[in-house]
Image (cartoon, rainbow, N blue to C red; front, top):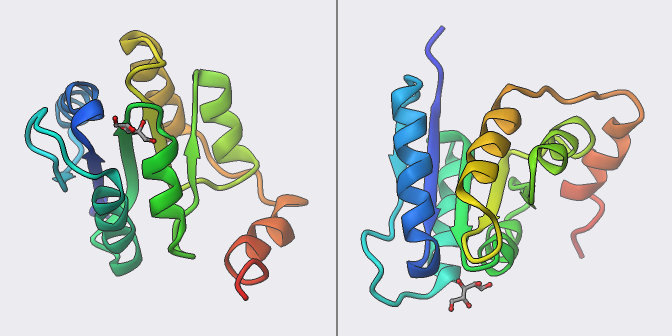
Amino acid sequence: MTESAIAVASDHAGFDLKEILKRDLQTAGHEVLDLGTGSTESVDYPDFGKAMAEAIASGRAERGVLVCGTGIGISIAANRNPNVRAAVVHDATSARLAREHNDANVVAFGQRLIGVEVAREALQVFLKTGWDGGRHVRRVEKLSKGCQR
Ligand code: RB5
């Protein structure tokens, strides 16, 4: 079975960590879809959150990694799309719980807040952890159906 791509995207404030995580993913053999940005030149994080949402919604990527200064703005942008469940995580525990409880398909990091090694470990945990299902099914379904106006 062919594994679908993992998309990565950041603004300027997340560019350095995005590049590190991208290299980790490539080294581990994943197909990586880099949605930008391509440098530390100032850009607007909503544009990259939107690009991630489009990659997930279209099926071009199954999972995504977002980075901005805090992880907050870019995840808010991506989460405007009901196909996206982006979770800002701070460590391996929050990465695991975002998968087990929320079936998060996109992980977001704040480059200005998290250590590089903590982020690298959290990403590994995010990718290897499955969704618990069970009592979480109805709740996760409500995220995409019940939260729309
Ligand atoms: C950019 O300065 C910063 O505001 C952005 O990366 C992010 O932290 C917003 O949520």
